[in-house]
Image (cartoon, rainbow, N blue to C red; front, side):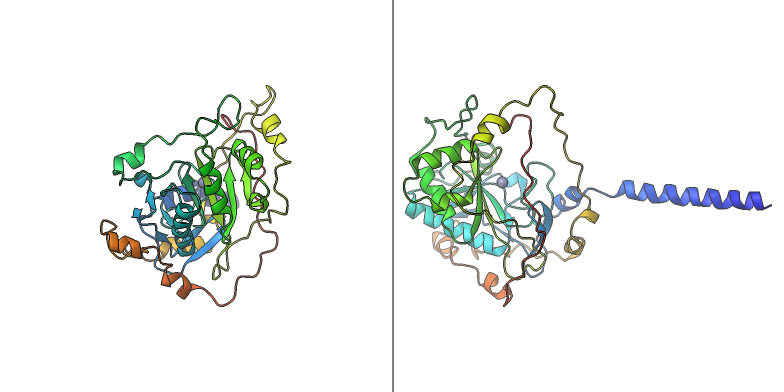
Length: 347
Ligand SMILES: [Zn+2]
């Protein structure tokens, strides 16, 4: 009797265990949940978590066209960001036109409507404070959707040497990156080490802005602008400080080690396992449940085809100020660090 009772309990426990592990296995990857979201959430703007592990509440979409910008890759639907980032990018597009004689910015990926991990392309860009800007000047006409998705966006790096391709580099590109670095809100800019080297060699005497320009894999046909956690985002994790100095003395490792083919005995690059919702800050599950913000929450009130309307678009959003909390968030101890770059196939 006792034996058969134990047997029944055993079978139940086994079934429960199978059920539990089955449920765990069925948990969808966070990238699948967040990439399925088509609208920002109706909530006060909040960057939640870290740049590479978090999400975005109350995001705004960058209007497709402005007087000094166009949004590329519309099929990806990743032109969402914290309202402060949207305002900063629009301001940067005007400043670049003035300071770098750069007709307009071509924007690449920002974040998904509610941020979060993406199915492809980026580890960061998850909390609405990152944006890619192409090193290709906006043409003096409005691009079609097909052009925005398919237009070649050439690299400025010579792939054989990892140094700048002088045929493609223009002095205006230094002015453009310097203008971005000099925006007070900008905390970091990522560029290919070959671009950083070129900036180091040609910056001249005023070099303090170079501190924010950090070498990184990729980023040879675009640069990546990152702003700091914004007031009101109490769950946003600050990253470590960039310290001091122009960083121009720290490029050898990149050229001599990081960008070299991996040694034959190196472990093959393994893609990191997917992030599950349970590994993101708890507030991100709530962000997925928030109602849609609807389609009208952009900084442009009228279609950009009317020049009058798009000229108005560049004013900072009233919403950003309205949503700002009176006190900035306290710095989070043990802020997540930017992972040290590792060998990656193809750099
Ligand atoms: Zn990027």
